[in-house]
Length: 77
Image (tube, rainbow, N blue to C red; front, side):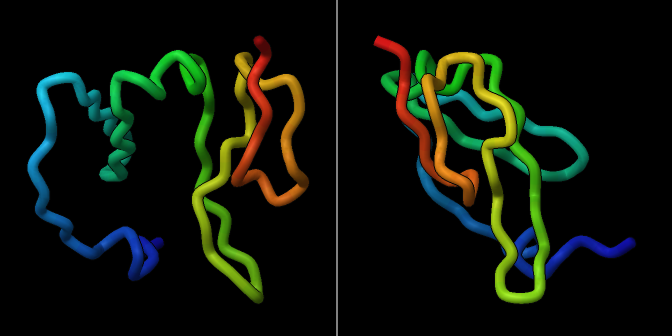
């Protein structure tokens, strides 16, 4: 199965020294150091539906609750 067009795009940008890059299966997720604590242990999935294609956080142990679309969440404080 070919990767969706969004995954084939090449983005070039400078990463700061405190930025983490996670890569699996040719997809990369970039997280800044300040946000890492909020998404640590999360699973991100690519969803392709009739009306949209998007990356979704499907499992986040740091989240108290999340929205039904999988793009936002509230963190445990």
